[in-house]
Image (cartoon, rainbow, N blue to C red):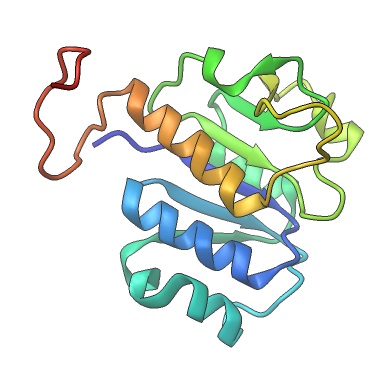
Length: 166
């Protein structure tokens, strides 16, 4: 099965992470969280957003970004930011790719965006003057695009596509 690795750098809102746990469980992605977290992993809001998906998702918490790099590299790392210059859909995703997102209030810091371990910085297209998408929604958009490009490997009940929907 195709596995992508979703990474949240210092997430602050438990329900967003709960929704990311649900997305990870539904797509087979791994979810990596980098401390400090703005919530406890036992937070009821996180649990409620993730419903019964916690046991179906692979979630790892790292003490800091250096620990995460040690665990995740070598891999291609795609950072997602309003500062990106290419659309998320232009990336040719491969199994093992890291999909890196920043915290809800600040996004990814400039030093992370400029880090040589980051393969590219991409953005999700939006209308002008719109600031950002919800973190969990942005994660789902990117995770599903990566999975789509890889034929929804492992998905239940899908016939091979011929490019047309009859």
